[in-house]
Length: 545
Ligand code: ADP
Ligand code: MG
Image 1 (cartoon, rainbow, N blue to C red):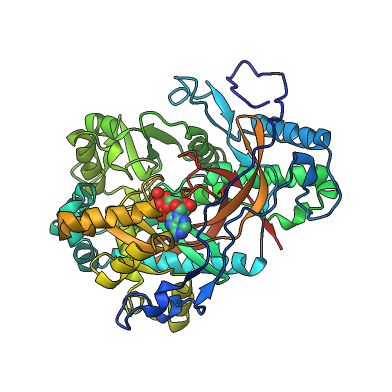
Image 2: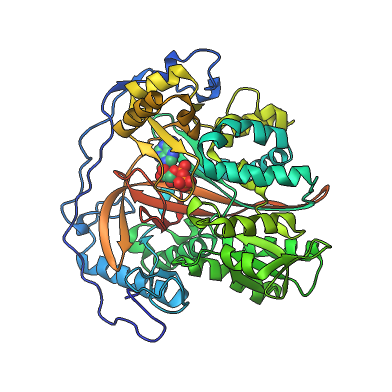
């Protein structure tokens, strides 16, 4: 069910369960915390110090049931039958198909271009993942603080240009973004209406019991639409089967992400104050995650009466212009708000055409979500710079807010810190090496960290500036049923919590600054990367404990 649908035909046969597939895990065994030996002037502040000197991690995977029926998410010893689980999975697949929890099916070549053709259910976890309520509250509390921080940092052009000055020499993509930023500075261009639709991602480190930020997305934060639906799906599953599963649907928090983001887009549109103008969604030429985007534009239209158009950067270059008063006009439509769901990766700029379109948008008076400055604030290099001692204080006056923000910063270093580079070569399993890229699949883990560091060192200093080093977080694993292509797999998994946040201001007036729903993503614990669209993780929701 829900597998390989198109708008007219649905497969009627239920999917069979595959034989149980055991998961493996590859975590380091006993090792010493290398951070304890860092110099005092290191960028790794005292807040990051893990108060342990050594700990044990088992190399052996924890015991996994030999068959699907032997495990129950509620933690009870009671055994669930295969028939029961098959029924729950089947119902969940039907629900997904009927409620639009879908993505384009890769096996259909038209599924990334034509809506309603070649849909398959989005990959999801059958039941929500437990999360202690204290972490939930902490992550929610951080949302408005990060919103303010992004806004403040975006106004400090020198900080952005200086922090990224070495990166731009070795990373052409970041260099091009900085060039547009500079051009706007030279025109003294001010963004008076500023809209941020962010997602801050976190993992809970099992050794320190700390909630750490993985990254802050300021461009193209994906899954507000489908993420909202997964919470609904889980509540539906638990309303029907909660007793047998030992789970209560009231513990799954509502997920208003799609409504909140649509509301923020609508408010930005009304601040722009041009009643016939539209919201323009900047999209990739082929987009299998189009339904997530369509959920947002549908709520925008149905609830707020705001029309939207979808255009690629190439189309905007050919069919767009900026009028002398600054109005962006594309295909005859005045554009009030530009919402980027493309433009975050070099792949979205195959030629000068796309860069011209980005510059055209930036030079217009339309509200950009994000502006070039907001985009730059979301780079991994800026995340690392903000983690340096005394840097947050430049942007945040309130000391409590500084402490709250800093508490979620994991260890982050630039590669001109010789000592940490040596430590990472020695213990690569404790680090993640990150280039200035978004969208999943770009980070380097394990022994590859050592090899890459050696290679970059041998090539000379500049290459190192393209990367940052991050402390690796090890979340506690649990068992989940992951449903992909109509097939259920029982896996050892780890989860990443994303908190959406919307921010809108017009000059001095803050109109919206709020937490706006969430996204839980769950992946096989042996997988390094975490993106759903990139094929590593499934969509999930939260079960508060
Ligand atoms: P991207 O912009 O590609 O999404 P991220 O920084 O979010 O980059 O990294 C991608 C994925 O890699 C994350 O979703 C997470 O699963 C994993 N990851 C990133 N940083 C860490 C870390 N410090 N420790 C453990 N896993 C990480
Ligand atoms: Mg990410």
